[in-house]
Length: 325
Image (cartoon, rainbow, N blue to C red):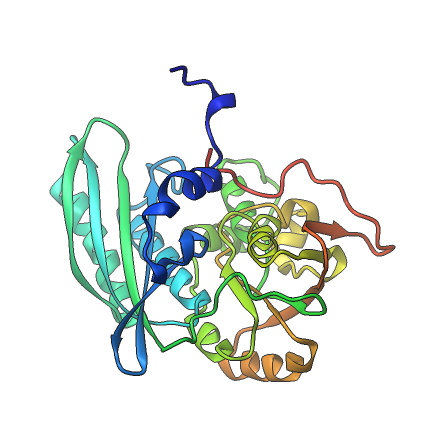
């Protein structure tokens, strides 16, 4: 058997062909970011897992405290997009053989700070050593009233498309860390780099959206790529208006353009769809949470996702977002 890239499946083909047949009913065929387990009458446990590896999801030289925070927050972000209230998490570490106690203590300090902020606690896990890069794997748990987890597959033609916060900041922050934005101000650099190093899970907004939206996920691989996941599982086409995609002032001053912002990853905002009749409810819920939400597009019959200019023409992009394989 050869190992050429042309013979390897994409991430989602791999999941569908190899692992989905192993899944239980509450795992939804592994087509979502989380699974549900009925634990009590009227409540379900929402379970999600993300693995982060050095120099792929974070820089190996990043402060251990910040690596820990990012690893925990990206998992809590998945729970938030599902409308779940976070409860706890499992932590598994594959540590390079040159690890030190001060490094571990700094890593644990980051977890301790975020546990208090996010109202979660460590419930177990595992550690091992590796000759490869640092790997941090977290499984996070949350709860929802039974049957209320927000799925990916509920978008319908006629729905509106929304996203929380601003898009592209984290990608611009990584670019700044690489020294490729030398002319931005120190303040703007701090804002953008902060978005890359420390995602802000939208858990309050996610819980407020339960029962109001038709589909949702968090933006990790890129806005267009992740909306593409909703389009695929919902069997619809999603159209995004480029002039509506929200950019921060720092990103604009750094010269970020919408096609780049919409295909960058690590935003960890919530992208979602909802019936037009729900627009006022959604904007009210967002205001109550103190989280800005922007209407950016619509759902139509068809397939895929497209970014449109002000004349309704599709803007070509070389890739929709980050690809794992």
